[in-house]
Length: 444
Ligand SMILES: *Cc1c(COP(=O)(O)O)cnc(C)c1O
Image 1 (cartoon, rainbow, N blue to C red):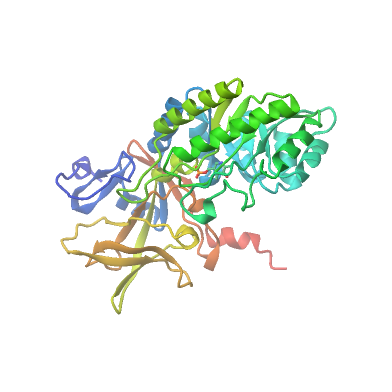
Image 2: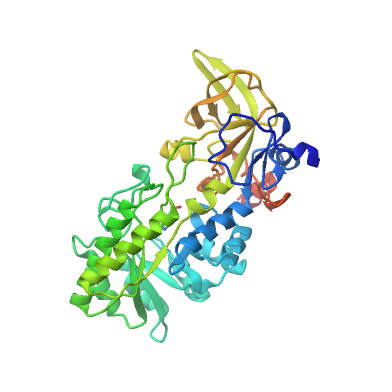
C-alpha cells in the first residue's frame, strides 16, 4: 500500500473508540492498525488471522507502571502469551503471573526473569511445582491446604520458597457468573469466614522452608468499578491484622489480582488504572493506619486490560444466508479461535473492512464455520446490508482469552498471530497446519 493510500479519510461517521489508539481510516473503507492496512494483512497472512498492536500493548503496560509506580504490576499470562509478548512485558518492567509449567517455561525460555513471576493454580500438578522450583519462580500462591506439605516437601529441608495465600475476600464482582471468583461458592481460594485461610496460614508458618510474604485475592474478571477492589482491600487488611494478632507475623505484600474491565463495544465502561490506583492506595493507607499495620507492598495482575484492546481478529465472509427475519453472515473462523461468546455470552462489534459500502446497515448475526449451532461470534450486530462472500470482517478487542482458549475443534487449525508496529507487520505465531496437528497423532 502506498503512502497516498494510507492517508486517513476524514468525515466518516463511525466509532473507533474501542480500537487500538494507532487505528487510522484508509481510502475505500479500509483501516490500518500500527501503520499497517488490515486488508493487506489478510492478503499476506490469509484469514482468519489475529493482529496484535505492539505499541498498544506497551502503552497499556506503561499506563499501569505510571499509575502504580510503587506496586508490582504483573501481566496475567493466561490472557495471551507468546515469546514476543513476554519480551514486551519484560522490557516494560512488568512481572508475570503464570498458572502452568507451560506458561512458566515459555516465558523463561524467552528470557523472562523467573524471580519476577508468580505461579497460581487451584490444583497444581507435581510437574508444575517441580518446574517452578527448578526455574526459581519468585512466588507460589497457595490455594489449598493439601498443597502446603507437598510444596514444603518438594522444596526440601535446606530450600527456601516465598509463598502467598489466596484468600476469598467475600466480594462478588465481574462480568459473568463464570468469571466471579471472590466469594465462597466457587473453586478458588481459602475462606477467612470458615477459618480455612487462617488454618492454612498456620500450617505454612510451621514449614520453615516456606516464607509467607503476603496474601493474594482475585475477585473476578471484566470488572469496571473501583469499589469492589476497595472493599476487597478493606477485608484483606482486616485479615492481615487478625494474622498479626493470632500468629505474630506482619505480612509485607498484598496482591489484589486482576480482572480490570475493558470496553468490547463503543460506550461500554472500562476500569481506569489511575482511578483504581487512587482508590486502592487511599483505602490501603487508611485501613492499615486503623489496624496499626505497616502499609504492605501492593501487587496487581491485569491480563485482559493489557492485551485485549490491542488485538484485532480478521475473518473472511464465506456465506451469507437469509432465514426468516435473520441475516446470517458466516466467516472462516469461529468458536475454535474464540470460544468466549459461547462460554460467557459476550458481545462484540465486528466491522466490514477493505471496501466502502453505501448500503444501509441492517441487523446481522455473525457465525463461525464450526459444526455447532452455538458457534455464534456476534449476535444482532449492525452490518452493511450488502455484506457478501469475500468481504473482510474485523473484530476489535480480540487480544485476550481468544487464542489462549482456542481449541482444535474440527481440526481447523489455530490462526496465526501477526504483530504490527510503526508500519511493519511481523509473524509471531504461525497458522497451525495439518502437519502440526498430524504430528501429535502417532497412529497407534
Ligand atoms: C485470570 C486472573 C488474572 C487476570 O484477569 P484479567 O481479567 O485478565 O485481568 C489475574 N490474576 C489471577 C489470579 C487470575 O486468575
